[in-house]
Image (cartoon, rainbow, N blue to C red; front, side):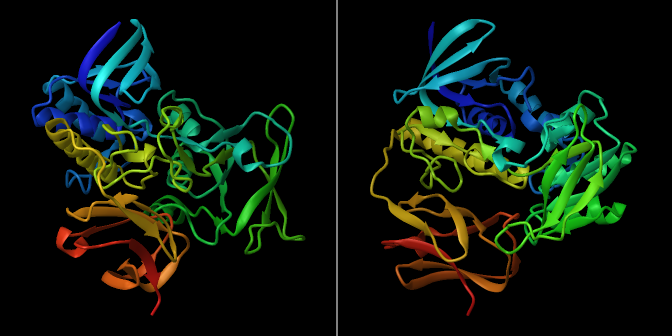
Length: 413
């Protein structure tokens, strides 16, 4: 079965829903959103803590409340959301193959938006030595067990990694009566938002062990203990610093990976740093008419930024449907000194651009400078920048006029 659609959106999380709503508001009616889970909303459905929507709605919402705003709006606008359906292939002709309860369907789209979100790194990805007992969970799985399935996962808990979900689960499990012995972080700084360190650890007296990592796991049927050691500036364990913690549960909050198997299989050019697609200022990938936004493009720290980026992608799709514009002359955007990555990867120099980036380490009292070759275009002053918090800045078309090569870098002078 082949069905023609104006736009196919893969993923009904915050990015996919925001993009669908924005398109529908602007008159695009023939949209389908593909979602592999039984319900729309994505990861927000299990994020029952508040803190969402402050930027987007000027309200403090829980994850499900935030998602429901978009779900209700999508239903009101008549957006078709196919749940329990998985996209298994995309080709360069923008044909999306989907398998679900109705069998196999191929959608022939005028434009495609990739909004598949991300997944968690596991124990295998970081190579912790030791036995393989029960009681080891990624932070998202632990969150799902406790918040959705109402299953308590342990009593004495160590958390490896200070990503936001790990910090939030430290508080959540404490409130459920567990003892969170410590949050262990390999870097000399937290990888979560500063507010989460304060609200989830400091307010509950939970220790944060910076420059430490788990070096061994013990237990047969169930986890019995983990050994934690201090690490040097290269991340290597320091002899004589190890300490054993008796515990029955280890939670891994060790990073997220954009869910890009479909993207790679489609032959779309990828960024080795973000592990997302290479995109231009319109969030268009190397395949004309295929766009990417949200955590599948690069991992965000705030869902409000995900929604804003998805709306930007939807606006680009609207222009694409109207003009069928193709990738023309492009100026490459380079991540310079102190910058881990910057998005978009290319610009035309003819329109206002919102740049998103992360620094490679902690920086204090610095300037973030955009350069055309060696000539500064514009600088932004910051007291402090952390890798855990995404930096978002805007440049006007007038500032990008006649740019031949664009670089963004940290300036310590």
